[in-house]
Image (cartoon, rainbow, N blue to C red; front, side, top):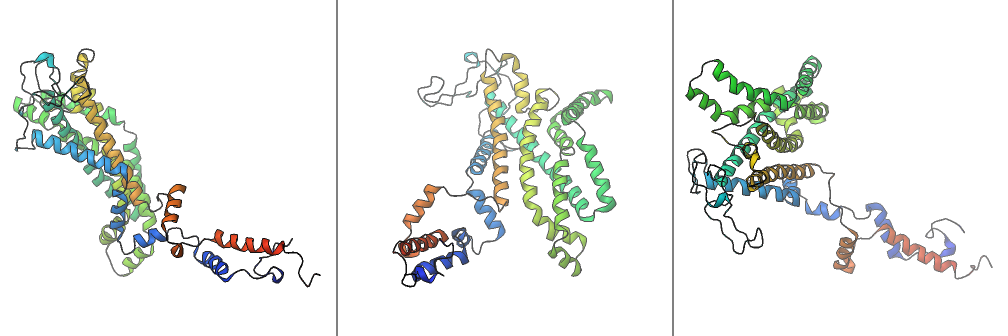
Length: 408
């Protein structure tokens, strides 16, 4: 039996015009993949496309919702700066009378034996000196959020600057900046934070600082810790930005801007940096998650935030002796650490998928069948398989009709 195309064999007869047309149309235009998506995003800018993909990412929307909810809860209850909050305990360090053994007054139907929903006076319970745990946890959330954003901003500024200069100018400057980056990478972050925390406790005594100066240093410990860690954690971002700039500097639009007389500063900030913003934003959000856990680890080791400031890691350290008798002192700080870290990770994953044009959700076979049945018969997308099937059916029918007149 010949393998020749049945449409070209005169013995088998010609395929119907509609089958040939469908087959040729499918071969010219493919199987219709991406046609609906192309129509859907037609006329949208790159920023609109990224935002459209981001808001359709369920994990990113969950993380963003959790982060906004936690920020609003801590701000509304404990205030921000000189603006007081709505919670009845604003002085979170003030002790009080321990009521009912410090048991949480929060009641949720179906959980912990609760029959009705009630907040009570101390929803997260009290510690051994009567401090309200809800006020302490909300203040710790604010401290962790401050460290997260401040550390990420410093790492972003240093990492982008070093990576952009090294990738654009290359040569000697690139070698010097990358060797400095390699040197900083070798510094153990936990050990560096521990040394910093020890110095903060020793230096005021060594230089005979007044009690007011010591108190000011302890009050600004979140800022000091954020700056110190931000000056160490910029290395991975600098390497990624450098690799992006090494590829972008060889593109045609950079050559055109250079020929047009644009300065190096304008080429870097107006032409190359916007094209690398995806890598920068994604890695900054992932760095925010690392900042939350790192601050909690340093505070747990008693090298991070100190009184009168309070953080989530410090609360776990302060109450670790009561783990067996009052475990709720660990539930709430640990829960909010997990929520903040997961929210930042989910947002970073969503941004990574949104900025990567290759990350497209492939519909399942069931979704494809449903979409096919919902289309009218005259608007179906022809496929090469359909045309080939029609041609093969015609070929098979012709072959079973027996030999042609010429062969007889």
